[in-house]
Length: 373
Image 1: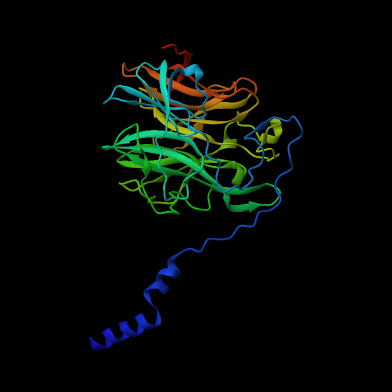
Image 2 (image 1 turned 180 degrees about the horizontal axis):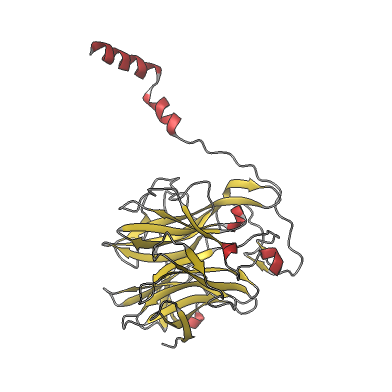
């Protein structure tokens, strides 16, 4: 026994605890920015504005005035409506992370600031595709933050890939305030060397999954992936699994082939965007997702043959809606009516939320008429 203790002491002296800890910490690779894809032609269709500058954070904008407006007066990408049964209130959020409230789906009060990211790498950064989910006795906001000052990969003559991660925030109330579920400064829920956006939450067999996009800008043919989360949602319990690639859908078109530039550059590839899993009234498991096609942005659907997230997933033959609309999300009114919200843009106009009726009584979702509250 004395020999064992002596050996342990000698080992501790030779290899201090801090040294052992350091050996388990993955050193961050310094990414050198490189030449990007060719620039778009003057006047070419272009999504996302000019190439990012790599500025550490966006300038803080003046706080908007709180007002009550109609849905038609709101400009927003990636809209998401959470109906809260406790308060009989509909909460609308999306890209930008601000919140609007309504009791009738017609008039909305906002935008409210609901997010506090103090002490994290996301503080001051832009949030995209925010969603609200109610699990247990907590409300979770899933949102995607980017940091263009922190590239994770340079792909020569293509793109300086920034850090993009979908993270989870938590609150006791649907209207917030929301703060990071994991507060460590550099925490990322997904693999740190993956460009991850548009994460959503889905529950199956007592497991909560995050379903998310692995960006086409990094891997050319974008994928939809899932990863199981721990019971407290603070970490992934397995590495991501790919569900499908964008090119598997006949209506997903390669960006250069349709003359579409991205961030002012001619980057080839196929896009995955905005997943949401749903079940029809017959129990059929489907997924809404968006991509780019011959009429620009579009909404598509695929269905799981097994009825499980594990698939296989079969893409529909035709898009669900293909008129520069997409990133759709389903929700149910307090009266039990199933509705579908998307953003739509006319020509070069702003993206505006629109609500449609849907029929989910069969094995497939059927798009109905524009909803008028």
